[in-house]
Amino acid sequence: SAVISQKPSRDICQRGTSLTIQCQVDSQVTMMFWYRQQPGQSLTLIATANQGSEATYESGFVIDKFPISRPNLTFSTLTVSNMSPEDSSIYLCSVRAANEQFFGPGTRLTVL
Amino acid sequence: GESVGLHLPTLSVQEGDNSIINCAYSNSASDYFIWYKQESGKGPQFIIDIRSNMDKRQGQRVTVLLNKTVKHLSLQIAATQPGDSAVYFCASYEGHSGTYKYIFGTGTRLKVLA
Image 1 (spheres, rainbow over the protein chains, first blue to last red):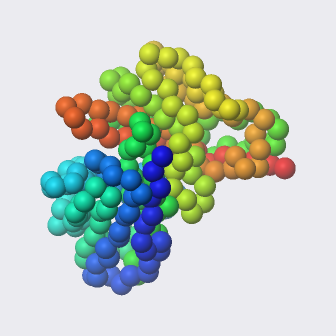
Image 2 (cartoon, one colour):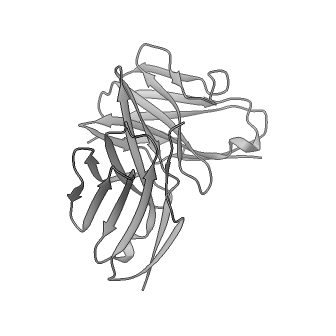
């Protein structure tokens, strides 16, 4: 299994600012994933992050808005840039280990 | 594009009864499906999975049925308990050329009535 922690667990931010979310895994994994879950909705994949290469973004998500770092096999960050109220959501980090997908507890972001 | 959707957004079940949560998917190339449970304030947790070469798989109190003909899967929970109250998501796994991703359905909230 894989245990995932995220920081911060929640935050309230002002419009126009940026927030960086950290994801730490207790084991080395090749691929890490970032999801967004808007209130009352399902999970939408933002991007896939491999260590040592640029993240691969899904349709509708761009690097300028959601820059991702993946400096090593146990850590990744997602930045939500120039935030607007529409970015209010839960952001979840996920990894695949032992043929199973694990999710972090999520970061609840509210943009005022 | 691909989609995985659920028929019912909310399901209320009496404690002790069986629950059935349904899900439809659109991509016939999907070969692996997973059900997740998400409790309030937590990330999704794996419940059970099924590969496309199977039509039924059983776990502890849960059964997943897959009908590839109509691209439909369901999650059955036997003897539903209060701790089963959560949002349930189905997801399809699509992997090719060394990359893969999960596509999630819209979710069903299960409410267990005492």
